Length: 449
Image (cartoon, rainbow, N blue to C red; front, side, top):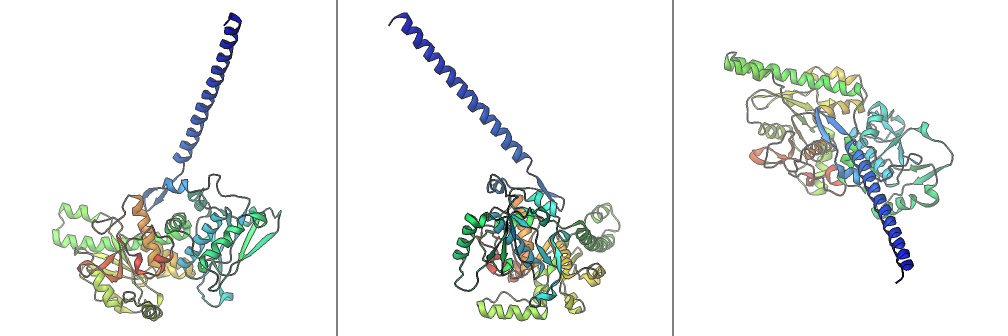
């Protein structure tokens, strides 16, 4: 090979090496850039402060979100959300998850302040942001689901009315296929898809419990309602502290240990006591249809089982979350174990706080009081009780606790309608791996620990 050929070969190899070098440098630069972006995204995702506990949002929820985020130029509109507080929370979450599936922003729905099951014309609408914090919701659920306002609409295209099917032939599979078809093609070109027909609580359920829990975590009460709950909880703890202080002073004759103990925060138990007449009629029918005999509990059974939870005789307030029809029933306040001090809102002297608000807000206050309790006891076939336990389970899950049977946990929950150890109520944690919310809405199979 002559010198000229060698020179050409050397230049060719040099060019190739230079090109490879540039390619390698470019790839390294891209990797470093993507790493910086991803680290920034994860480190700034946010923390929920719930009862002074910092709950770190799981990265798995981030990874399950759409990479590009929820579209903010496409919207989903749903019918007014109705019925009780917890039915409305479920309906709202179901609407959010439907919008997520369609990769659309949910237009802020109207809730119902009053409780009418059949007289639709008497429903009192209330804006979502009068109950829950709009901006806080979007901040906590960023990348997972998104709320929008009607003022955000550009009205550049017409509204597409999507009729929800009904009847036995409208199966879960058919409903899902209907939604999938609406997420593409000419339907998806519309700025707004408006679902007409049944309210979202009655829609088929396609979403796992964990997704519902994720939405519920983002629901933060507006300050006005939260402060009302603060007043009730403060009154409960003040009474508990007062009774404990008296007992310790008598027993210890003002020693130093008593002073230290009495200044501590007094714990309380919240019991969602379902014994009103309409509930008892409903649950008896439910027992007959289902063949399950662990749905109804009478007053005496509840009182006895709750009494077997706490072994200490230190005075402990038991807050009874009961229907207004039971506020004049003195029997719910008698027969309790020594050391347990039963109070409902009237005896507590806070019924005035509730009376100035419509039904929905009253329920939201009671829900908050129960969810903050050191111990919660409810009925596993009650939606109110089930959602409280779901949220308490989620709090424990954030702390790495997945079972409560064999250990003492910070926020224990119990189901009084199911007999547990030592003739007490069954320990209760939500099964977060369930594929739909139906299992925890009306069923004892939600009991797990």
